Image (cartoon, rainbow, N blue to C red):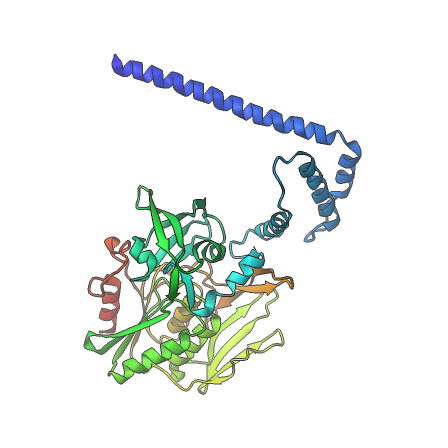
Amino acid sequence: MESKNKFWKGFLVGTLVMAFSGLVIVGVSAGIFLIGKAVMDDPSQTQLVEERLQVPQEGELDFGGINTKMSYIQKIIDQHFLFEEDMDAVEDGIYTGLMYGLADPYSVYYNKEDYAALQEDTSGEYCGIGAMVSQNPSTGILSIYKVFEGAPAFEAGMLPGDILYKVSGEEVSGQDISIIVNNYIRGEEGSRVKITVLRGDSNEEVELDVERRQVEVPTVEHEMLDDHIGYIQVTEFGEVTSQQFADAAEDLESQGMEKLIIDLRDNPGGVLDGVVEMLAYVLPEDKMDGMLLYTADKDGKGDRYFCKGGKLRYESDYGYTNSSFPKEDGHEIQVPVAVLVNGNSASASEVFTGAIQDYEAGVVVGTQTFGKGIVQSVIPLGDGTAIKLTTAHYYTPSGFDLHGVGLTPDVEVELDEELKTQAVVEKEEDNQLQAAIEALK
């Protein structure tokens, strides 16, 4: 009997809530209708908008009609908007909306603050928390995939696999990753930032209070493993990565390296020159026809990177040259190579892996890569702002377009489930690394 009473009480409460919700919806709708009626009482303005909103030619925007409609919307805002309007933010919103309409998660607008912060990205040192973030291009969800040992994020208890939910109380899902990192997470040294993450299958909310500190991003780390197997981990391709890689390889060679593992797991990509220089350093000349990478825009034009006769060469259909090419290389790795990848290995790391596979210069171990085979160009607009625009596909030497597909490893090995959320995975328990060692043996 008691359970029945509870049921009917719950039913009645639910009915009342639904009824109230219905009233709220009707009330809001009525409010919109009344305001719309008051504004639309100006028939001359309505007619002008209707006249100017003609269907433009295919592939073109009707800027005259857009300007008229924007003016009309602004008139409504001036008359009825409850709060004070920030005109700079409104203007930025217009440009942001234009880029959003392209339906490409990689094409975005940067206002002055965003663009200034973006230019700090490849310096290799920043004032942040010491964690790496990735973004799902379909859902916009941001997740932590690497936490550097000893960094502020590590000390605060952040773990790989955490979903970035809020920063300073503001929800961040769906916003551009570079803006979130540069404008929300990074900040003045010694300041603190409150970060809320969702953890585990239950999406438990975990609040972290993290100090911002100067963090030197270790793009390349290396050590000698047992049996004279060299190990080099490359976490991203920055401006200094290729030189750091060469220094690491030479150090391992001096220690008697007989085999080499290059770990590109969780490497999101980075500067193209860095990965091209690394490929020229690793690939054996006798297995190459010279091509390292090429790109093609919507008209079939693009850039081509070669390495032949110990020299890097760059060609472009656009009539400009890269100041760092041609340059001498004259080196190759003369030991068996294994490359480790996973689902977070993207962009430039896929360029590297694709060339290794095409030239059969090593064995690839791990899981299917991310599948980002497109190039973005940052284009300054002359007023301190810029846009990032997808401008071309890139292709591996054999002509493979990996975008949306990724690269399949030669030896497929999933990381053990319990290791995926550990901030630090010891090499002895890293089953993917052990698989790469076995593949080399």
